Length: 122
Image (tube, rainbow, N blue to C red):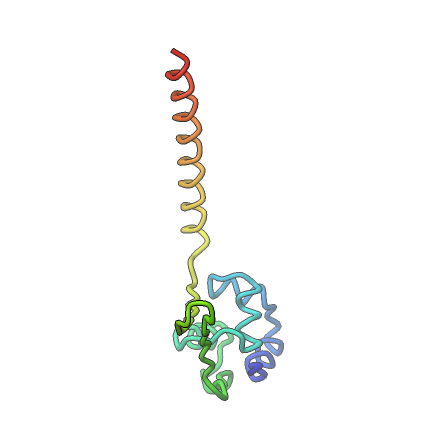
């Protein structure tokens, strides 16, 4: 369900989706999906949005009309499993730190591979 009250207040306060996303420590597309109702907005996010927009939660919050449960049935296996999608707001600095660590590990793997090649040649 599209969050029309939120969109209306955001536009009245002259905030862009990108600026709201930065306040909430997420990407613009993640924020857009919340406005479209594709991702549930947590109570904490409603509070942070209301504070950023200098308004009450009641003036922007709209409940989802129904709760969507995604279920899958695998006909090949005959097994039933539920699918739960969880979305977390991870600050950019943590993602950057993890990317740097991944790059360091890739460098170490490359160096170790080169050492193995040298040792195998002996």
